[in-house]
Image (cartoon, rainbow, N blue to C red; front, side):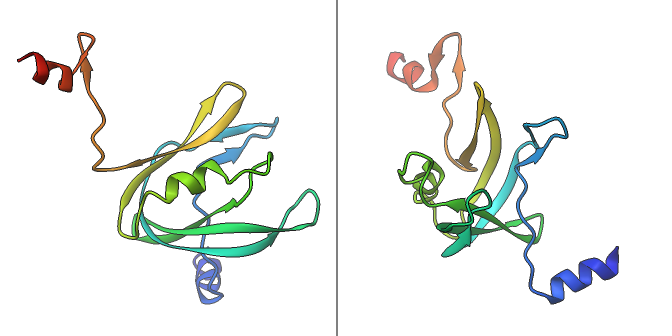
Length: 136
């Protein structure tokens, strides 16, 4: 399959960052956490599969394990609001290292995005590190 990969590269096709895959019986399966570096973003128009309508889409470019990948998000969610992932990505800049993961929340899935060097509070015996510092 090396020739196929070479042709894809020559055509300038950037592989998609796959945070989840379709299951044969329906639904999706998460592919686990992905550590990526933000490269850039661009606003493009794509055709929505179900309706055939043109929709504004944000295309993010990342580097994962030395390979450039892309991830598309429609600008508006199903309710017509700015998509939550675009709001979250606005907090980062090119060069930031992120962990992205598809997480199941009830009957729906969402994409969790954490900056790798973000401090996540550690809770032991019911008290956070911050609470322990205050009490000391």
